[in-house]
Length: 313
Image (cartoon, rainbow, N blue to C red; front, side, top):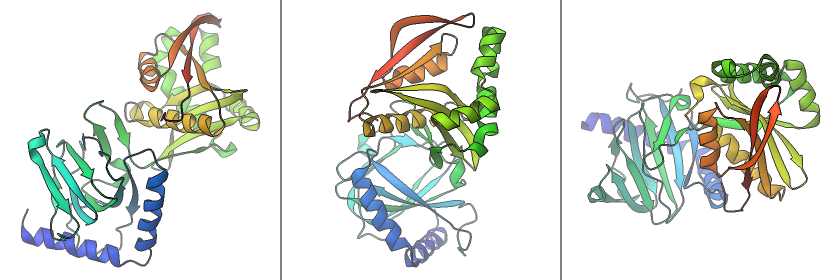
């Protein structure tokens, strides 16, 4: 990477840190990381008004890393990452081998780590660490893949409670998710599974429905009902283009956190044997088959249950 390019990155970082609200943003991230179960959290910076950035830079991020916790070995298949440390110290590994470990220290303000697409990397912060990262893809496009598990994650994903205005989009999400499996259902079972807009609106009056938002669109959903010390999930669906990118996993994590807050002991759901990807996700998250099978409009569905522990998620 030539000096002129790095000089542009340094100037952009200095300008970013000079923004009035950045100090408050970093302070809030430091508070949140203490409560988070994740090894790092982030804030996406609007770079529309930034002048002089290299043309290939499409997004800017502030990350705060939890001390003495690995950030997990991961890579980005769709972006080149440009990172500098502005607070903290520790070690960074770029590549699969631990021989590639090197020290990082915020006192060295001119050091940049340029991490190419598909190159694994991992931070080992000794202190609470703040880094600035510039990426060559837009923020809503950035994908992280963890090397050990193969788990994919979209960073800019919001999970929230649905409103009545979301009913049509929820219906469309469920319909798109189950369309490839329509041939395995009876007509009655399929119509009951792909919930109508009217039924979704009725549900919204009686229970919570979660939606996953990405790029201002609903891409995933799940309906939840609290039954004593159990939370029951139904109508969980992720749009086909977003399957395998961590959306379903993040919805389950949100439900798990809710179960802990509500002091529930279990989470339950029912599934259908042809939905192999969904079954794999549920089992990975800790669900186990209960052995209970029932007839659902002419098809056999089975129960799954997950016990709740506060360390979960």
